[in-house]
Structures are given as structure tokens and as C-alpha cells.
Length: 266
Image (cartoon, rainbow, N blue to C red):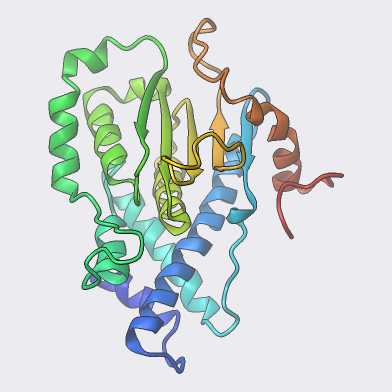
């Protein structure tokens, strides 16, 4: 992880910024760009017939023109290699995210404190027995409405993978966080594992909102996809009609076709 941190810091090396400002900008650029790259990589092999898909304009990284773009690309490449070499659904990003963006700030701003990886693994082992997982025969919702960079859901997914990875096809992730950058970090982690290990889950909905005051709003979804459900009678996604509404537009954008009403900004 030391090498990855160094690569990330190289993104803003030499800029006329304080150390904290430089590291913050480097990490935010890395997450935003990494999310965009891995989202496109996932779409390249998953946007097939029957897959509903939506992504908000947040996918398009608004990068500072002063950063070192080669260092940025190198950092994302190294991160992808680490994910590929790690056990699927290993939380690679949370500790680095916390060290760079949160340590020493005592939760100031949005009051963020992220779950340690060993706690996520231990909690998943307590909540999900092997017999429970092996008995799954329909879609199951795994949710976290204050997901941060995704440590707790990753603990559950790691548990499922190690007990019976064939049951991942029944997993529908439901994630939310009030911080857009944390949402991007969670999406980056999930997409990188699915891409690098060629795994599939049934679906994911990632929302960016204050779950207390903004939950009833209709424009909070940042990323979502839904694959055909293993059981036709499972009505888990009836609440997400927005997927069907925007799916074709998003597919056109990522396949290079022209859309009259583009969902993505150029």
C-alpha cells in the first residue's frame, strides 16, 4: 500500500499547495478518475440485452488541469493490479482513504469515521452463517445507508465469496452516503473487483444523499445496474422504475451512439 500512496501523491507533486491540500487533491483526483475508468471497463463487457443501467453525471471526473495525468493513470493502474492480486472483495481502499482524507480531522465536516476491515469481516461472519448462504435461491438485498468507501458491504461480499461464490448472482447491493466522494470510492472498489476478477452480482443501486432528509427525492441515485433476476417472481426492483427510464440513454452514451437526451455530460 505504501507504493500506491506514493503513486497517488505523485499526481500533485510539485504543485504550489500545502502538504494537506496537495494530498487531498491527489486522492480526490485518483478516486474520481478511477471511478470513471472502472465504470467504462465494466460497461464494456456488461451492457448487454436485459441489463438495466443508469449513471448520473457524477461519473465524469472534473480534474484539475495542473495535475500530472500520467501519474494519475499510473496510480489507477497500480490500484487495479493490487485488486487483481488480492482475494475478491478485499477492502483495498478504505485505509488509504482514511489516512489521506480523514486522519487528524476528528470527523470534522461530515463526521466521517470508516469501519476497520477486520470489524467488517467479523460482523459478516456473525450475521451470515454458511448454511444461510448456501440456502439462497432468490435475490437478497445487502444494504448500507452510510456506506463510506464500502468496507461493511465488502465484508459481507467477501464472506459470501468464500462460502459459495455461486451465490453472488443473488446479491443486490443497496448503498448510500451523503458524501459524493465516498460514493465514488465505494463504486470504484466494487467495479474494480467485478472487472479484475470477472465476477457478477445481480444488481447495485448507489445513492448520494442525506438518508434522513433527502430519501424521498427522486434524483439521488448515482449509479445503478440490474441484471435479469435468477427468479422471475422476485419483484425486488419494482421500486426502481428509474432504471428502465434511463437505461437505454446510458447504454448509448457508453457504446458511442448519439443520444438525443444524454444523461452524461461531455
